[in-house]
Amino acid sequence: MTRGATWGDHVGAAVLTARADDGSRPVETQPAGAGPGVFRADWPGVQYRNVRPFAVTDPARYLPGPPPGLTSSAYAQAFAEVEQLGNAAVDAPDLLATFQFWSLPAGSAQPPGEWLRIALTVAGQRHLALGEQARLTALLTMTLADTTIPTVATKYAYRHWRPTTAIREADTDGNPATQPDPAWTSRAGSAGGTPEYVSGHSAYSGAAATVLAEFFCTDRIAFTHTTDSAPGGVARAYPSFSAAATEVGRSRIYGGQHFAFSDQAAQSIGRAVARDVLTTKLLRNTAPVHHGPCPAA
Image (cartoon, rainbow, N blue to C red; front, side):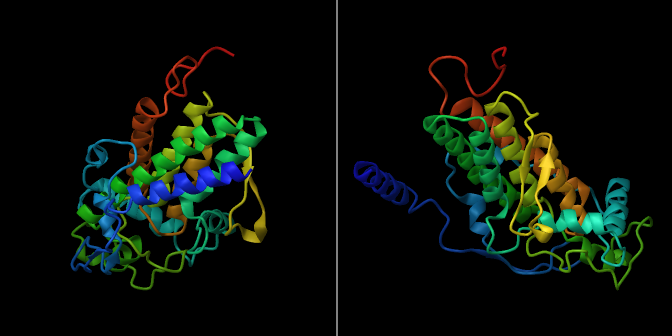
């Protein structure tokens, strides 16, 4: 036990030294913007768009194109959906509960930590050896960390306005299919503290669900999970990793925090980063491997 603790201290110190100049400090802030389509508040933490990745070689490969134009029908459709589903004035206990379950306020593990807990739960259920648990958590945490880079970079590049601002100021977007509601309030009760496009919750969830499904050679592994923000502390059951990731993304719309196109683009970012990590890092020397076609049971 003493030798193990000593080795752990050594490895931890080495990692801290290796990451001391990774670009995560000093803190940089994107100033508040103005005008139609633009996020309105200062946003600290944007240095993470340039942080040194753990596993992928070129995070910029995973930046999506821009969100739908304000005058497009795609934007109007997403606008109408969040205007209805994310409206605090609409009594919908099921939508509120789903939003709250995945809201993960400051002080909780936030989305990456929730997925690490899910991974450890499933690893325990399937009696993974300690070495395999370590390999799984390494793959997962590298993926989640690297997913941050294109996610922050996308938010920084487009700094798209949140639904609260968009709906209250719809008379400025130039789209005849959207109508302003100056009194509209999100079910979350706030506009959100970062630019809207893309959803961080969705990016992390798409990444984690992909790592877990490919590591275990199947997506359809049932599990139960509860979060720090779960109403009444009640757990939820999921038939698969992708089902949980889908619910996380939709929860952001139910809370009035994001448009559907931001959920979809973010999930794609996460899945792409995960596949990059799975095909290049911590590969086994002999089959079966943790990616690609899995051996028959």
